[in-house]
Amino acid sequence: MEQVVKHIVLAKFKEEVTEAEIQKLISDYADLRNHIKQIKSFEWGKDVSIENLNQGFTHIFETTFETLEDRSAYVTDPAHVKFGSELLPALEKVVGIDYVPTREP
Amino acid sequence: MEQVVKHIVLAKFKEEVTEAEIQKLISDYADLRNHIKQIKSFEWGKDVSIENLNQGFTHIFETTFETLEDRSAYVTDPAHVKFGSELLPALEKVVGIDYVPTREP
Image 1 (spheres, each protein chain N blue to C red):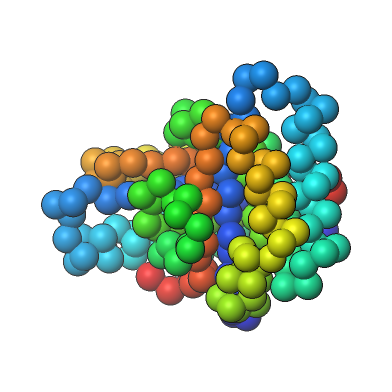
Image 2 (cartoon, each protein chain N blue to C red):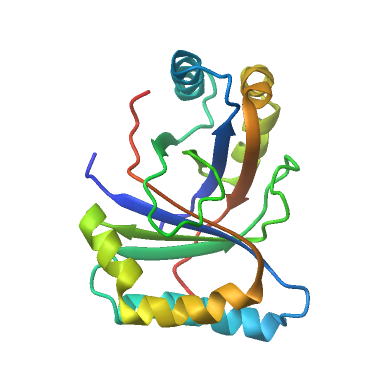
């Protein structure tokens, strides 16, 4: 399996954030791939779980990188820092977590 | 992009759970793919994030399915139910969330 680094963000938006504002933030999130060359892919989706374990999180974002170094460059990239300063104040809850996936137990 | 359903579990194990017990749970989690035919892939990894947003979660598990129906069959499959009854008591915190990833903002 090709090595990859996955950066997962789970978000719950504040109640006062409108659908239009959420859509703008998602567009801006996706647009980072046009500004930060280390981004290998970006995907997102809304929670559709049925196990009652979502803990209130409603949106999932996955950004992938080829290496941990690329992930670190992304974190400190001014475009990401600027976007973070727009996204985080809109969130009631957030988890950001990175991992190098393996299929081996 | 081929459609897929991603089932993400974030876990923080209780302090008293040993590394050997964690490894056994991860092996049992991975082994579900040998018992539940709807599982398309299973990957996991430990948190390596650097943004201080992991909220204490240390392990990430990603199971993928081809359809929401396959995801639902997995959730109710006896092998998954049995595994859940082993995993959940070992966790201090858990998030389980599903989404159909898209690249379009």
